[in-house]
Image 1 (tube, rainbow, N blue to C red):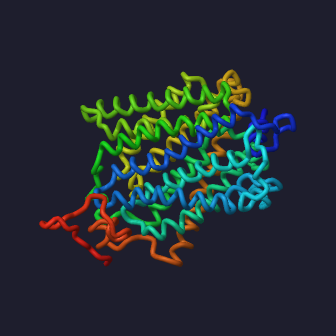
Image 2 (cartoon, helix red, strand yellow):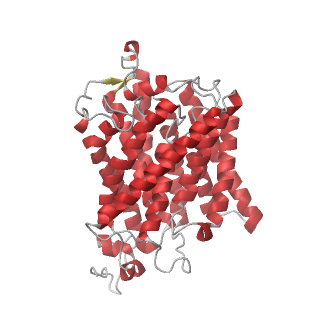
Image 3 (cartoon, rainbow, N blue to C red):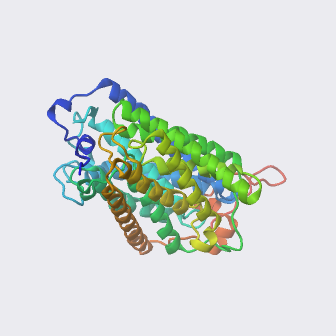
Length: 435
């Protein structure tokens, strides 16, 4: 079976000598892609912020912004070298590039190595931010910061090594994951589910359910995510080429199909489509196409988006009977859609799109089994690593807010700020101290 060695050699900077020259077009393309991916995390903060109660909007958005600091520092310190450092083994990269030493002036494929490093940093940032959606409105902010640091280093970085490093064991197995179906989506979804189980439900759940306080924010955040996701997926080609163009087209196609299918299901079941449903469907499509975008045809992308939207819709519709209090449906929308997309990559990948892609329709039924192994491995690492990380953090600080703080709202308790200021009759802000 053909393996991903050419692509993965590019990712790790070990391509043949003739490719070790910086290409201006590729570099300019990835510079733009980095800007697009960076925008995704503030976009996610806005999307998540609109979905929670008004009294929790700042804390919810702060978790995404904190992820930019947590992953940004942890990845430079040791995360990058754990994932892509030369001289590693099947599980971890070597430590020679701690602090991003030995990368300045280097070339990865046709890119300056620092550019490849920042592109990967931004992937780690958005993945941790996605996880936060499962624990909003009850997790202490300090606990999230500590947990996020451990998670990036001991879950995300090793999984990135397994999948995208030429030394990683899933790489050697031949897993197809163009932009992070396992590394980003399955990992964040399973981690969110485990975190929700460990923390327990919000006060009053499921009798009292938090409803979105600002739907326009949800739509704005979705638009920013969709915009940024084009760079997330197309940029994963790491070159300005035909595969990148196809990935861009497929990303938009899957999101469009998933949005329409979600609205159709809502209309069939409830008589009317909702704005939050349309936004959710679009995000599900973006998630599902992430592993497949560089391997399938545009028609295949429509199928991926439609199937993932259908599966996720029915899981979300029945979430209170099936899942713990995963506050913003991270498992149903990211984990499950990531699983669907990863498995369908094994079915729909064709060499006409990417010479490395040989799925079931191209006569390689074994690829589906390889994709399943990748999903199970990512879920096991994410679930186990999340559980252990949370238990370690619990030894240092309580994981969740008190019941009184939850009822009043976490913004004041955690940040001494409010997203929407409460004023006295004289116009002065009302101060509410910590409990």
